[in-house]
Image 1 (cartoon, rainbow, N blue to C red):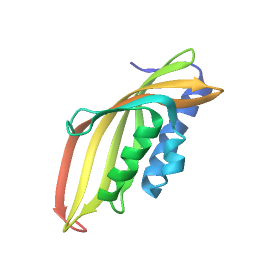
Image 2 (cartoon, rainbow, N blue to C red):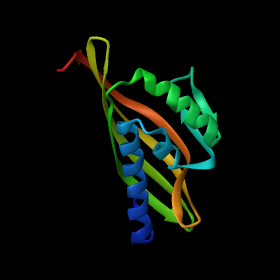
Image 3 (cartoon, one colour):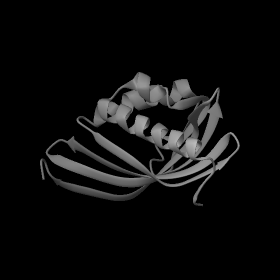
Length: 142
């Protein structure tokens, strides 16, 4: 996979990733929800207790509850590949998250394999699957 497809669509998908990241960092459920298609699914195979959640409403409810465990999170994502085919796109993005849990600062790094869809001129996530790459724990503030 590479960066293929119309430039305007690739920029719009990058902005979708940036809007998602911004909403996570601000813990803004409304803005975060606006990045998802109604019939989306979100898979977290490294978290079998969560698994796959289907439907925007259920995804947002799960995220709102989960975010209670990530106070002060800083979340960033950047694309590794965007391959556009009409109104769908395959996207791989890498993430880095930093947050405090108890007396530790945690740094997670991972990647998403996504499918995005263009609906009414807007790109949205229709499926996301997240995998961990690396987790670092250190004394709080380090």
